[in-house]
Length: 523
Image (cartoon, rainbow, N blue to C red; front, side, top):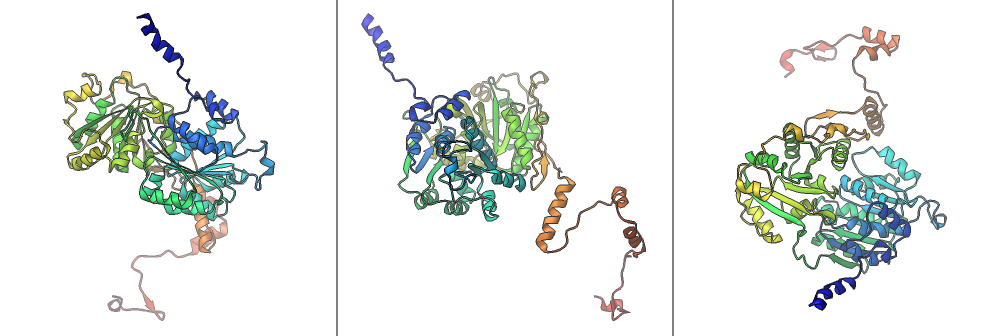
């Protein structure tokens, strides 16, 4: 009996220890930087990717959202470039030109990827530049001119800078396409192919995507050579969704969704929550409704200026805001490990969007809950999603904010109401996070989800006026408001001329050859 009891201990003693990044011959400086950030053991997708990518081979990586793809390509990318002062930098054909490029579909994902690369390269001198729309061109151009070893950006802004000859890709030895399926959905593939055409033929190309639609596979075949297809999946998890995500689906009436959501946000153990909607208007309205009910909520969607979007993301990451309401596109790149709940406020369009939405929780090995609200009109659509992903909930139960199963399924106290008690309003809120003026092109800023306000400075407005005037080939003029302060700056001669100029009167008469035209012939 004693031998049988000792046998499991002997088996455990012979089990191999978890691998570390050092086991894959990763640069010690990168290993140390990751360790300082609390990252020591690679996830499965990283363990499968690193040996192939570090050997310089092309990769097609397919893995579920939230499984750690960024470091899977980020570590090999950083190891392939050299920064100023490092060995081999002086031998580069064009020191300061980008040696590696990461192309992503959204601004938020560009910020997140650049942040992860900066974390892994904290002990290196590698310079990482971010280029994406919504920000002014000048700082990004200045960063490229100062020298950028790695460029992370969106296709549209990268094409613009390429056309203006501020960005060169002729020396990029490594190219990464992240979230390729989303770039296909947004119509970016032609831009991506143009960017790939501007890079050297002998580059290393790594393509990562949660799904592999036909056009993405076709592009990979055209631009990659002998690519290794890596599909990272837990052997015990055959589902398309991550097994650590608890999925709950309810049939909820549109007029009752906000009441159900308000109760859900008071569940026991609830941390940060992402609420996802199909439209910008819905995202703005839900954020406003939640804020009025006492929740620390903020919105992020396409109608917001980039400064407001980044303000909301920073507040969410710092827990000043614990409920983020976002549209599908804006949600890409929201990589926060401790998101406990994702709420599909509106039914996703298809199974791919569902996967990307639910992938905002259950990240990096954490547990998560995905709750989906299905309108009566969306039941057929949901049935198709359920069948494709084999979720097992084709007919969601009819649910209201008074339904007993809602409180039981999500561990919600029965005493909660539709408003957060004042005693529990501990988050600082969006206003506690400073808004940064990024010199954005649109210059429009919104509140949690509300009305737009023009935050453009007079110099920004005048700068655009002058640019348009130069493009049109006419003298540039400065816009002035009709105020005494501006009038005081005008010269006496100009003021005198204005006083002598006759004012136009209403009902002006037409003339022909200097003679008045009879009214009967004017029509």
